[in-house]
Length: 152
Image (cartoon, one colour):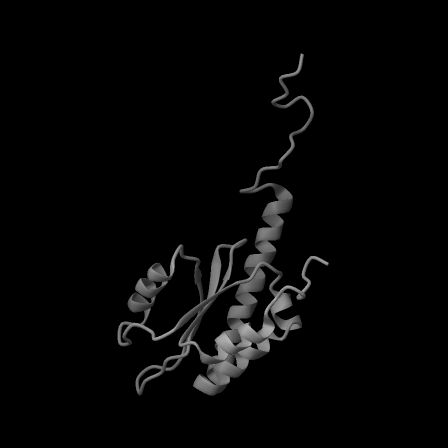
């Protein structure tokens, strides 16, 4: 099964979502990241948004400093690669952990922001599937007969 959860460490994922200051759940196929910064202050609530994927933790820390300049470096960042469909987040219960964390740090407004992000990720995924089918930004491993064929 393509989106099997057999090889996922769901308990570890749940613990990381519950405890890390910043959770970067990234989707390599789309080069997008669901970024959840659970840190709060008197002026700022938690942040949840969809951003471009970065190449390193250091790059993510720099982007967080630009996005949340009133906060110091986070004590903990967890980066979770997600190679499955977006809806598998819900089916495996991972999205429930995200929502519980959002609720505990920011209440209903944070839940609403998280759901908007989930919808945004679904739209990105659909767009990426369409690109794959139409060949936009993708190349096949095989060509049409006669095109690029060097056989005599």
